[in-house]
Amino acid sequence: MRVKGLSIVGCGWLGLPLAKHFIANGFHINGSTRTVEKCALLESCGIKPFLLDLSHKDAKVYADFLSDSEVVIINIPPGRAPNVIKTYSERILNIVSYISSSQKVLFISSTSVYQNTNTEVSENLKLEPDKNAGKAILAVEQLLQKLLEDRLTIIRFAGLVGYDRQPGRFLANRKGLTTGNMPVNIIHRDDCIGLIEAVLVKGIWGEIINGCADKHPLKKDFYRLAARKIGLTPPEFIENATSNFKIVSNAKSKKLVGYKYKYPNPMTLVTSES
Image (tube, rainbow, N blue to C red):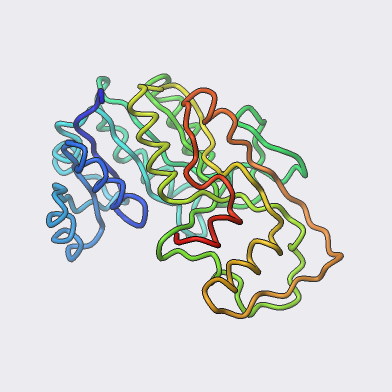
């Protein structure tokens, strides 16, 4: 393992177990949170906690948070503010401006940057996101690429599932849904952590990499099964409805990174413990 010091911006649903995983493997972790209450939780997990509000500039806090870290992992979503494209870029820039020229950045992005093409999409697609969240994330990707160049790697994760984030709850009891014939693009949290670790182990920088399960079952098949698995009423889809879609390719993550997915088939995932 080449890296032993990490600063993780955002210790939430993915960031906290990610930090725990690296601590178990001998890393020193600085972790951020926006709430005083959560600082105690981070500390109890062996994480050095920092109270960070990226909407404000605080040179000393940022400098302390980034110290002793070879890699900074930025793992915060854009949120839903009306001016999200502008505010998300400003928040990220507030901390990135304090990252030194010797530090590398891993930006946790999303496949929401891909527009619906009704085909497979890969990392070299010319992007035209459909929604503001995707536009905000793309704007940050471009900002970071300009500032960091080959000191940056971007991982675009598909829909996140696993543990308490059970997909069976997402559409349970819904009726008249028109998206049943869309393929799903998801990734289990364990695979998110595994792919991040693989990128760091192999020192892969200056790249954009998709993280997504191998298989893409139809939405109607996946969510019906997922709801039944946890004892909820399956959603009802209009059988002949059509809608635009995309199929996220994970070929680069397997070829370049050499990553083998623990949960390659979402249908198998929802019939087993997750």
